[in-house]
Length: 270
Image (cartoon, rainbow, N blue to C red):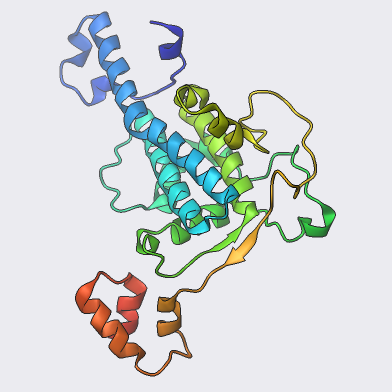
């Protein structure tokens, strides 16, 4: 078994699920486990890495709705990989229940509860803006990513409220979560990615940057900080000061497209 294969850590026991597994030759048992791990990596870890890298780059470029969608996708896949590596089933989880997956993962292995969302200590934020950048608890971070990265918002149904604190929390949480999953460094996923993209991913990301650098204070010309919020037309049409005819607009749209659950609820309450 080569070094790359040894870099995976798992605790599932095939003998508990597969009849006659323990009677197979040792080398066959080892191959079965190896291929299971490889499928988990190919199906969950590597796509999660790609979604995480995309989320980070989207946040840096001001595409905040897309950031939340990519971040929610990455956390969902990482948490499922965590559970599978410990032999837990993920079949019962429908949709994208990040909070439920996180709770289940913590119950399966208490070590996960030690992963936090505190920004890396090397990140220096200018005092004039430091109080505006949120430091999110794990619960605030998980719930915020799940709510704003909801499938209901794929079509920009209700906008997002972004703070660069989400980006720093994502960096910290993903780094700790990947360590708990027991997989190779993210460089394995990035080996064939354009080097300029990798450098942009590593920018002000001391958790994952391959070398230690003394980071300059932010914001600066290379790395901006952002706080933004957006209101969509659907928000206006369902708000307390909705314009005349708004219900007719919603009723027409309801016949032609899939509306978010909260919009459908608004219609049913009228």
